[in-house]
Length: 373
Image (cartoon, rainbow, N blue to C red; front, top):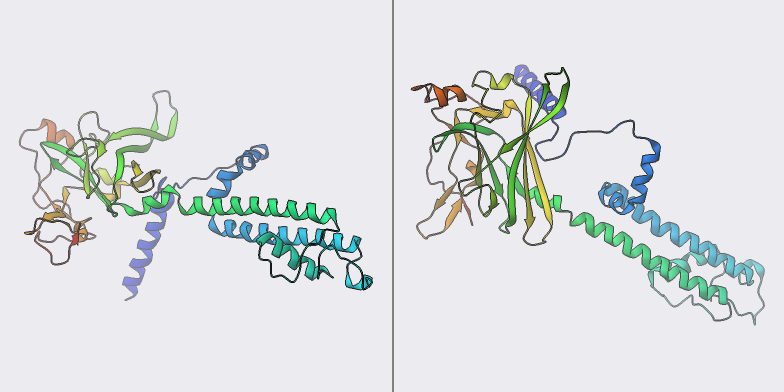
């Protein structure tokens, strides 16, 4: 039991170290921070205050929402209290019986605050009402109504924008946990599976990747984040994907590919990060969004292929079994890309592939529980 607990702790620590070393996490968040920014540059965030409000966390949005309304009610309550005091309407001023107040039933700070709240929220309980004897009170009523409308519009717009952010649509786009390398259509390919969990399409979807690694130039300069373009395709091409069902993306490992120099026994010793992007427009909202994920060498399996997940029932309906979305099976694969392209008879090295206890190998059949589309 102690050994099992120790293994879980080690796995958890290894996972946390993996998350810290990533530039892009599995759920698409960028793991980067900025330092030594000049204080003068912070004013740029205030100048672009709308984007700043939309991008800040929900806890701060709720704080500013509550603070803006409460503070405006209190400030205008003080102004109403000042007007009532200037006209002699307060209770402690002992106004005569024939005295006409600026605002009926406003005789103290509490009632002034209540009248401010009722005015800005247009509640109007009927106990407190403005009289025409004070021109300043009429002007203050107009000013508070306009400022209250501006605050309402701004805060409602911020909340609506945060709710409808395109990145929320990205939550329903799922990538496979692992990438695989195996032969496909006579070529050695790196494959990734992606699925749209909603029935609404992503219009104009495009898939591309970036390989991030540290390189040293011939001049001796070390580039920490060298980016290399990685082209991904599906059987129908690489642009304007018909993204109605899960797709398997593949990158051909040829002589121009950065994976060409890697092999089954050296892949996991390399240091790089493969970042995959999916750009598209949501059909229901017409908003553009980008989905990101990343793969490190330990998440790329050499000599495996994904299980099929799309089938057709006897009734003619297409079915997608998401239980097989990230499951793989071993396939015969060359030791390296060079062997695959140049050494005759070495295209296949094993029918068993590499052992990986994190994946379950199952028989392909017609499972009872499927997802109907």
